[in-house]
Every structure is written in C-alpha cells, then in structure tokens.
Length: 254
Image (cartoon, rainbow, N blue to C red):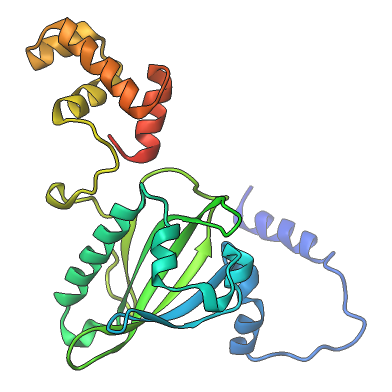
C-alpha cells in the first residue's frame, strides 16, 4: 500500500466522524489543553508545593483524596514517609540525594530547565499500596539555600506495580535528558539482607547455572553453594528457584 492509498483509507474512515448539529466555538489552544489535560494524563493525579527549608507541604490539591484517600490537611511529610513501602524508602532517600547533587552541579541559568521524576509505592488510606510517579520541578530557589518545588503525583499502579524504583532527570527547553539512571555502587540502597557472596550466587542462579558450575566459577565446594542457595531462599521467603528469580528481578536485587 503506497502513501496515497494509506491517506485515502484514513480519509474514508474520518469521513464518518459524527457531524455537529450547530456551529461550535473554536477555543484557543491553551484553553483546549487546559480543558482536556486530565484526559491525557496517564492516571489520576494530585500535586503539591513543598518547601525544603520548612519541610512543609504548603499546598496540596483536593485530588489527593481520590488518589490516596487522605484529606488535604492530613497529608504531610511524616505521613508521606510512613506510608511509603519500606523496601522503596531507601531508594527515595537515594534519589533525593542524587537530585540535590544533580541540581547543585548545574549552572545558574539552567536551574529551572530540569525536572526529575521517580516512582515508588505509597500506602492508600485503605491499607493497599499504589505506585506513584512523582515529577518534581524547583519553581523558586531561596538565596540562602533550599527551594520551593512543584510535585505532581500520578497513580501508575496499572502500568507498573513491581520492580526497582527508577530515577530520571528530564531536560526542558532543549536540554538533554537522562532516563532510568543506574545506581552508584557506593550509594546503592539495599532492601535485602544477602551477603556479597549470596548476591554472586543469586546472579549465577538467575543465569541458569547449576550448583556445580557456580562452585567452579567461585572456587568453592558444591556443598557450600547449596548451603548459600538454601539461605537465599530462606531470606527471600521464596519456596523455589523460579519464585526467587522472579522476585529478584522485581525487587531489583540482581
């Protein structure tokens, strides 16, 4: 099918779009975007303004109740941190540190040309977890340090419920973006109690290697490998290797 045939096919389809009974007003583009923005957002969302100096949420939209079940006057920093999934909290702290470092290294003229986004699980007031994508952009910098930030919280539970939280820095006005950054080994948050040796064995297990192969690679006995594998299963609270590998990938252990 050539280009003209494709266009002709679409033209026939679009010719069947229902007709308006009366002439309708043509809205300015800005009003159209404002009117339909919610329809194109990936999920329910609310936003707030957060002051890093006072550690206070200065404003929270009423939409938080439909997203997390909390009233506006209930949502504050202690509640936010307490409601975060304990496995995701180390990532959140790490992401905030990386963001502070990133913005601290930007030239002054580019400070407002970046936002950062990360995701994590937050407990709804009903006790169930939801996964939220949080987009943060500094809107005001204080002369003696700190900032007032605009934070947009979007429910992406239906898109991603499990897996390691991701951090991205998104450039505005033509600036380059940096998506899904790797974790620095030095600052890597740990959400498990595996030893370094157990992590090595876990990675080889996920690659499909048998105990005898792992023992040769690590220059340890097969009995030692089997002991480590039993300990890994116990620590991960998994009943078999398939469940262990799936959980390891989901939780970002490997």
